[in-house]
Image (cartoon, rainbow, N blue to C red):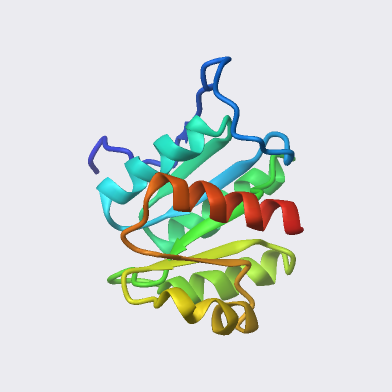
Length: 152
């Protein structure tokens, strides 16, 4: 097993005091599920800059384990950024379905390089809280997380 960001280890930091992202959602814990180490690292850095905690995993199976563990510790996940195209084991859609069995109110943002920007209505109809087409900018991830977390 490698010692990269794929480990299910919380990554968090507080942004500099002059950084104001205008969020009113308080402290959030965001689970990032992506098989690409670069996307996990980028997402965690952006989430950390918002003052939120991030946990990064690279498989659906790991996501389910972490999600359950966070609930058991009374530190539930606020939102999940889910890559829909996870190779190998469980797909992003299957993982999302399993997370919903654990907590039907889970907020999952669908992320994929195959999503069209105008796919928001279909994704929300499927039960996703938001949509994040890849590649995305820091501003786009911040805006989507704010939108999802303030709607709940």
